[in-house]
Length: 337
Image 1 (cartoon, rainbow, N blue to C red):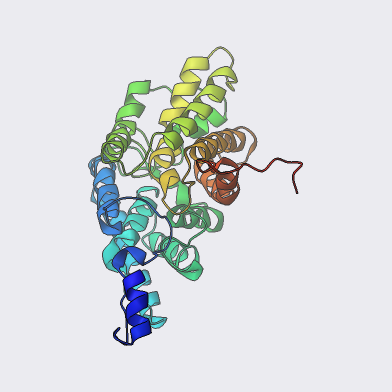
Image 2: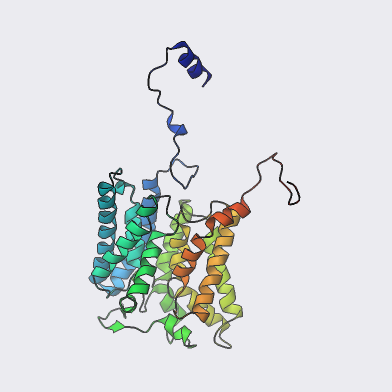
């Protein structure tokens, strides 16, 4: 920098000085890594493939069509918005593909084909692009799209299918737990994914495989999933809604519905979760408590998506409360001016 200043003073510097690449500041999240956004999103896509494969295997090709429409709509809406607003085309970073995948996997297999299109529009345009695009959104776009669909067309979001059949089934394990009844099937069936549910949420094993891959690749850390699932499991076990069924109630509550899916994938969005480890733990605990509260006292049998969106709004506060003090810096006391 001293040489540059001397060159400028002497008049020998070029008219337009290009700053080094390291001085360019990109949008949040700011992560010390050589990985690009495209590489990180590609890892998330790979982690979602086991859940996608099992969903197609269980519910047939219509499930693949629903997810494909969701992905294609997300990419198309992002490209159109950026073209209309004359912004750089950013669909190659694969973030819109990830949004479409998470949204599509959270939908029922027999949902009407226009539903993922409407959800993708809300997720990409309203929840993401209107806030500035990737890294600037306040809440997880895919979950925002899912909740939007649940509030506007609730009858479409419960068109589940029993695996191996084409019969629409509105009965789910979570609905049974809501009515204080333990499901008839074994816990193993729900770990594997043999029950009526959303396309990518029925197999706890497939979700766990994707989560382990993300941990190995260091795309996510253990803090949010462990705090999220641990908090919810503890409340389910010590305060079950069915007397004498502490273990079964806790296991069925964890392995069914969107709790595990949200804890592994949706709750670890880079832009909408804390960057501090303490903040991540508090974020996960808050998600777990809100999920249980909605399931116990709310009208919906599910609550994980709402919990993550609510905690997204508290991320700045969590980071402010858990930011570490720099080494050698003076920590201001509460009575100091």
